[in-house]
Length: 197
Image (cartoon, rainbow, N blue to C red; front, side):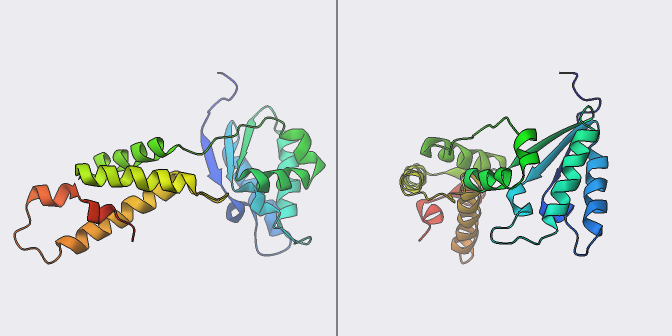
């Protein structure tokens, strides 16, 4: 779009901005901003800069430094912050400077159960696994149940990744005692493997 000269992205979180001692946080935050100049600074879980119930925290120093740099370098820097909706609202409301600088919001809805299943299948293909028909049916039910009973901390794709990793572990444990394992057995995920019980 021609807004930025480089367009690179620097990703960070609280640990990349906040130091352990007075006076070091501004230096640390400035270094991250410097590395993102002419590009994008992406701060994940930005609400962690303002821990709930804590008034005296170095995160405030990071926010003040960031706000000044956003103003001073407004032609050379795009800052994107991300996190859970309620926590981000608390973060934005914690400082009037944040409210005036972050005024465009994009809400990403949770994935549907079909989308979760598709993500699992993507992981499987990428890692050269395939599902038996019974395993596929079981997974669709598992994801439908997860979506129907999700809470506000639902992990979306992270939840799918965890299911996939547990499935691989269960498959490895299942095949451990099998002698002369075939290639087909090594790439096949059964209903046992994808059962999370």
